[in-house]
Every structure is written in structure tokens, then in C-alpha cells.
Length: 413
Image (cartoon, rainbow, N blue to C red; front, side, top):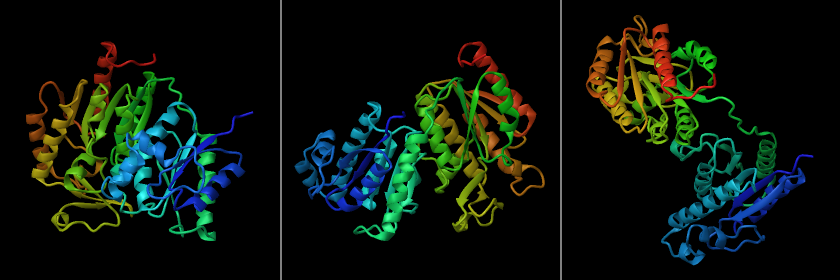
């Protein structure tokens, strides 16, 4: 018989005791086990928790009195976020929990985001929040596989409206704990970035060839959260090699677009000593959320409305040069070998002649700056081809095959 799954329930048991107890009872009624953690500061829990507020403060090297006297509610909750994250991570490593669920308003959600960031991808992590999906939450605070449920009607007190949210959340986290598949790596994994499969289509050429070489291929959609997940796994050394061919999140970051993957984009493979093959797919585009107005400075430029969720404008020549310099600087921080492929006939489907992003002068400006900045120890490969051409895929495979031959990248053949 499968052992019962244990869910860690986290919240402020001084102010939300009834709601947290109801959530806990929903989990127990479905034959789930519980551990509870109180992250209150001023008040006392009405329920005896497995981990008290004193335990949480102590895990952050403070007493609860220190937390109260730390200055204000923001500094106090950051200390509690630190302590609760450390306890959660320890419980995961000791295999004492199979999932976590955190309940909160803005204060509890702020803490919850830190707990989720402390836990690995694939571990069930649920946040029931009054501000789920809110623009208050910046993308860089989100764990790539976080699950959020709006706590409708849950600001103060237990009621029939918020019970619906809490009961569904209880089933969701327990169900995830029961059915989540433990990652079993039987082949080395190559991490690849792309922007859809129409704008950038090289993965269709590369995937079967890489699989024939004994690799598993994980392709990440470079629209912010996909890049974050890619970087998280790269930082943990989860890839034998990366093929980072969609760098639009860098241009978005520089332009201030919300469609970015954080300040550490392009840095984590180098930190984990993972070899990198890089190409500048889609760096000519600035992506905006579909609900946003295009800023005035971009309105006179080529524009493409991909769907109701995402739309793109174009970088001008100087912005392309700036992006080229930033890409080069980030690659040079790598402790691992980096090969850069520059397809000089184009870097995404919409920049071909007759398409809305066709801009030969802009491509020329980027190419000129790349030639100046991609210098040793980086390996520069310029090819007379478009990024979606067979010739581009062949060059990437040629570099990889050389790295396999010299033992830099291990395959499973």
C-alpha cells in the first residue's frame, strides 16, 4: 500500500487559525498526513503547530522578540520568510514532506514566494492567496512551477465562498503529491530555448538528431517564466549542454518589458560549468504583454501582434548594439566553454524579406557589434544562413559533436 503523503501547511495561525484548520481538515479527510508551521509574529497560535513561530525565528538565527523589535512588519516578515524557507528546505531534504501549501494575504504571500523559491522544481508547491495572479507579484519572485489559487472571499474569516477555494486547494496539493512523477534521468539532457515553433523552428531539425546522439531534449519557451525555469535547472547543473538560441528575454530586460526571465538570464549555465552553444534568436524583438499599451517610443516601429497574450515591437539600431554588448558580457562571465553562432541572414522567421520585422540595417548593426565584442575566450562562428535553415542546425551539431569527441559533453551512445 502506498504510504500516505505528508503536506506542510504554512500560515499565520494567530489571525487565520480557522481557515488553516479547515484547510488541514480537508487534507486529512482525504487521507493525507500533515505538518503545520506557524509564521505569526505578534499573536499566539490557537492551534499547537509542529513548528511554532519561535522555531521559525530561531531557524533565521533570531528570537521572536528580535523579530518584533526588528523595525516594522516588512522586516519582521522577511526574517520569518527566511526561517520558514530554511525549515521547509530541510524537511524536503529529509524526505519528511511531499508537498507544501501556504495561505496568506500580501504578507503571507510575500513569505510564501520565498518558501517556494527554496524548494526544487517538481516538488508540489501551492499558494492560496488573496493576490494570486496580481501585477503586485513581479515575475522574478515566482518559482517556475509554482501553483497559485485565488483565495476568493478570504480576507477575514471563514465563509462558504472561501471554503470553495480552500477545499479545492487541499485536493490540488494532495493530488499533486500523490501523482507527481519523480524525475528519472536515464539520458543526459540538453536544455534548449526557443520562441514558439513558428518564429524559431530549428528545434524541429535538431531534436531528432540530438536524440540519435543519446540525449533527451528539454525545450523552454523564452517568454519570461520559461527562461526562469531554464535558468533554474542550468544553475543546478541539470543539463549536460545548453543550446541557448532564443535571447529575446535579454532585450526585453534591457527595454524594461515585463516579459523577461530576471537579471540572471544567460548566467547560470556558466556558474554550473555547463558548456553552452548560443545564438541570438529573436533579439530584434521587444515582447509586451497583450494587455499593455505599446510605449510611445516604440509605436513607430515594425509591430507584430502574435495573439491576445503577446505582441512585439522592434529594437532600433543602437538598442541592437546595446543588446549585442550585453549578450557578449554575459557569455564572458561563464566558467565553461561558450560557442556563439551568428547566422548573418536572419535571426527569426519574421525578419525574412517581405515579413514585418525585415530590417537589413538593424541586422547589420547587431552583426557589426557582435563581431567586435564576441572575442576570446568565446568561440565565434559566423555562418551565411538564416537561423531556421538546415545549415544553422548542422553548425550546432558540428560544435556539439566536437565537444563529445573531446569528452567535454557526455552522451549516452
